[in-house]
Length: 154
Image (tube, rainbow, N blue to C red):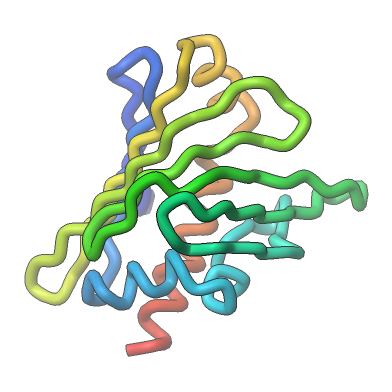
């Protein structure tokens, strides 16, 4: 059963939606605290090996992953907005052109939290390149890890 819904109806966007069996505040905590991020972000193809985060508006982050051949790559960005139920940050892969703006919204209902992540790209070509490298499969696995983590913290 697929737990991550992915939509690409807007030519320059990837929209991902996932429901977690946890309250919004706990999901937000897992999205923002470095020690918790280390426990869920990444996947079997590229586990996370480093988290640097200055979680404030204007603060930067850097997540480093290792691929099977031992090489590493990093995703970096700047936090633009931080709220109780939403965040906006930029995201780019170090050494690669292009940057996306990522808006994450958390809506709680009945003890469950629906997370919607919208990645906006400057061009359809950049969006399609990100899709072609399997980003959504990696995101689905990471969000499965996040679901297990927040459930274990209840």
